[in-house]
Amino acid sequence: MSHAATPELAFPGAAGFGAFTKGGKGGKVIEVTRLDDDLKNPPEGSFRWAVLQKGARVVKFRVAGTIVLQDAVEIREPFITIDGGDAPGMGVCLRGGSLEFKDTHDIIVRNIRVRLGDETTKRKNRERKLKRPEHSNALDCIGLTRCRDAIIDHVSTSWSCDELFSVVHCQNVTVQWCLLAEPLSNPELHPYGDNHAFCFNSSADTMSVHHCLFARYVMRGPQFEANDMRKGDDYAVQMEAVNNVMFDYQKSGSRFTTGVEDHKDEATPKGYAFQFIGNVYRAIRSAMPSRP
Image (cartoon, rainbow, N blue to C red; front, side, top):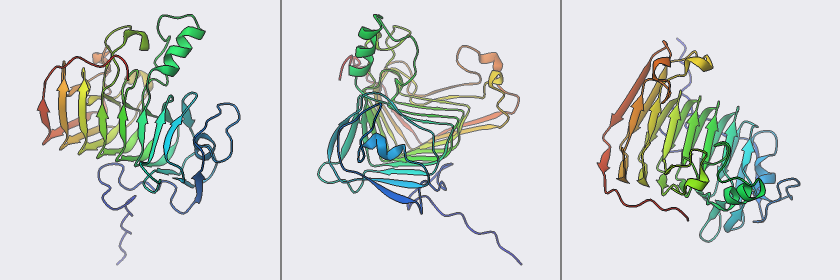
């Protein structure tokens, strides 16, 4: 009699759909040794340089402080672990640029802060002589698009210009033990020009969100959306929000839709299952912050 091997957890305590991602396990350790950033020519030892390396890799930090990014960091190479748990002092914080994963897989992000802020968006508006951005690209703190096998653990996010988290067309994703708080409400920071202090959008995913704190936002904490027929998604959607706290929201703590917001009649026939279990909701309806 043969027995299938039990999959190995990404790390002790990992749970949910993304619990078995490999990340950069077994790959080379790449150290971040400096806090500066260069968009065109990332210097060796910088965060941008480290995460854009090829092959399985574990990114560790040998410096503490704030890394001010010149713009978004877009990661497409698979098998990556970003772990700030060993950073000295008070750890590391990313500011000024979104952390974006696109068309990739096996992702682990742990023990960092992402405080996007409004400086980069305002600078781009000035350079392009715009009142507000033309699109919503790179306005989130963390975004995953068309990815699979990912886990985000003990990450603190705030001061986004759109959502704090965005997970779209992804499979086997977990967001756990994270803080999502204070997306910015300034209408100059979003294409819609409204009070867009939204928290977490999850569209066409298989995903778990558990033991997170969502605080001071308008709505989408999280928002679950079914597959979009226009995208040709061929898998059933399953999303769960378990044992989270939703605090001080204005419109809705959480919500779900059977289509994609403005296209509710276009839910995929593949089906969907949404579960909200053991969450605590407390609406205070404070004014949303418009700047960091």
